Length: 82
Image (cartoon, rainbow, N blue to C red; front, side, top):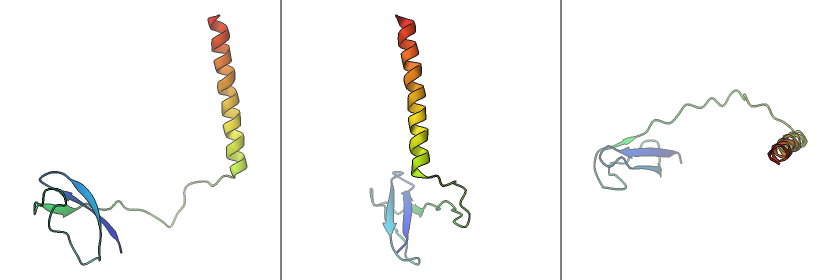
């Protein structure tokens, strides 16, 4: 079943509901007001992947290199303060 996000126009409460496409929620979950509307879902394009996949080893090497650089910078700051 799809999950829908609802918002109340009175208390501005927001919550998620799981129900069929033809069903709607009429009462606020928080204050029981009738001023409830479904929040439009953001559009998602699933046909194109823009993220470049990288290997775990590459990410590990990058992290180690960044950490080494940061350590050198911290050592330099410490030596300069003495």
